[in-house]
Image: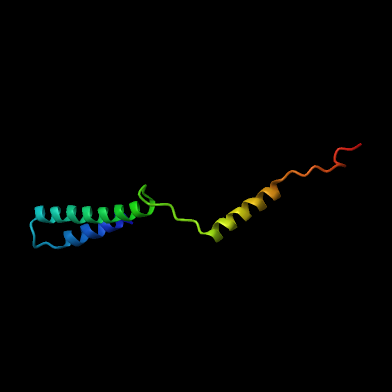
Length: 86
């Protein structure tokens, strides 16, 4: 996940002790920002408003219609003529 990637980036950058802390901090922020942008781009590609709905093929549409017809047939109320007769 995103938090795991940020932790890994921070631990990798924080592990190098040769640089001053301000440079390490800047690198941590930059790497976290890059990771966040990558994750956000993947999310936007998958779930965002910009994604066009997948075109339904003829076979998929036919199967959907058959499922709906079958469901309507099953859910149909049957009135038995003898029901309630005394």
